[in-house]
Length: 187
Image 1 (spheres, rainbow, N blue to C red):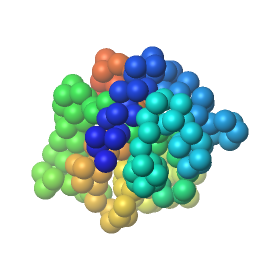
Image 2: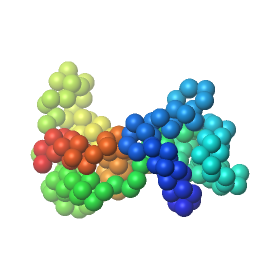
Image 3: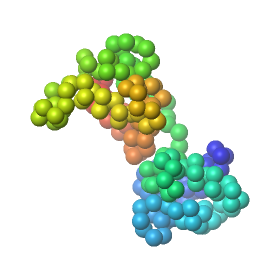
Image 4: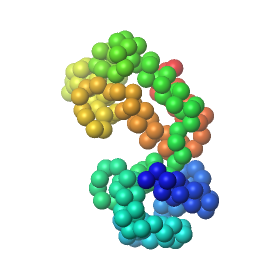
């Protein structure tokens, strides 16, 4: 599957789809009914326009692979995530630094409520200010942002990295990404 995704990525880049704006243009060209997602038919036709002729089964597998939320359609963020090249070492390093910063309390390889209690300023959260949430509820809500598969109150390094891989897919430069991470995590 990775080979076929690499072929699609190469064709997109060959046609000038470099950076978020180029990939967005490619997505819009494939989205013929302009409903902000790709159906299997639009995806299949778009591949053909790119000169990629895969067997029907391969197209279905590629579509399913890109459709991360299993909705039966490809949203722009899913397409962007699939087409963007893998994260650079610069981005991985700053993500690892941020993760380590929050895991420093317990150092057990996961971020938990205990890890957040010292560094996350709950008092600034609107729901806490209004008395709707307790401190632990605010912290739990924050942790759930990173948890896609299992909401167990523990954010693994993989979940943290996957979250920021998605965030970073919308940023063209490493410098922009590093600045955002340093600002967000005060590192």
